[in-house]
Length: 55
Image (cartoon, rainbow, N blue to C red):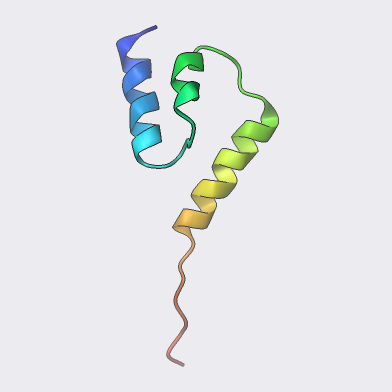
């Protein structure tokens, strides 16, 4: 596996974009749609703000 792919996978794991270290062994494989959606939903949840307006 290419080193640059491993770096991307390790960074995604550290940042919580992927939550299973087994994905690092499958970086050249195709991802099922459910896995891509789960990853994007988790990322969206992290990016959503959790504050209320003062107005």
